[in-house]
Amino acid sequence: MSQDSTQNIPQEATKLKKLAKVTARYMEMEQFKDSDHHTGYFCYNCIYFMKPNHCAIVTDEGADVYDKTSGEIAPHGICALWEPNESEIHSSCFLFLIPHAFASQCAN
Image (cartoon, rainbow, N blue to C red; front, side):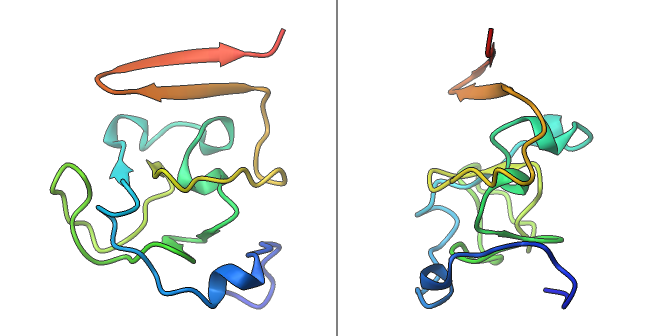
């Protein structure tokens, strides 16, 4: 991580052993690769995401739940451990990931 980063990774997370992608239920959502990552439940908006392509608590190596191996944590990925990074989220509208379907819910 660069010295000028504004990211604020929880210190307790940096002391933990990283989990395998499958254990964290990580998946890369290729259909959202070119989306605005500030507006959804993507790794990019997670407090554990370390730009450009790493995570403080999930390993870069190994296969995801779809058995895909990329060698990184993608900004358009998602896992079960996602925690919001308020400084990255630029919308009150979030994408909810439902197995085999996608739904959007926006604040009124």
